[in-house]
Image (cartoon, rainbow, N blue to C red; front, side):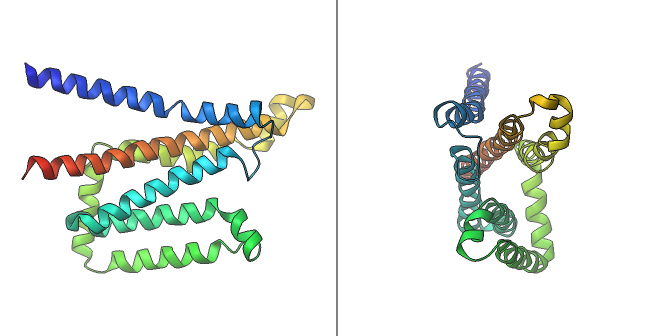
Length: 208
């Protein structure tokens, strides 16, 4: 019975944590629009929060790659993928630092290195990927990626918002729809990444 209660409490706590994390997009968007009175440009609290969450996700998988040999090959590949996403989010920084569109070059270099790394010792890579995908938080990670990379782009299409709002179109409305969806996706990826490392640490603790 105690075991059942522990499971129920654990899941309830997990739900509460997820619910708190899901308030982040609304709180950040509210602060940007109401208090900072901006239309969520490239340099905004919303963008900075997205970059911070993506950076944390990247560091989590780098940590797993460094500390967990069995997950190393997959963890470094995932970290490389998140690094490419982070570089894309920092495109304005690279535009100002070097030239417009420069972000493509470091992102491509990292992607190529990740592919070369994945191609080495293929069986270990496949085994690590299978282990990674069998984690119960993999669907949540995929959901976050889908919301950020697909849903937010489609939901933020300017043509649709022009048709819906007509003469009442204000760019800030489109930006709120797109950026809040994108930030929601990053929050889910952050939640899944945290639980990845927690589940692996718990597994190691239970088997020692």
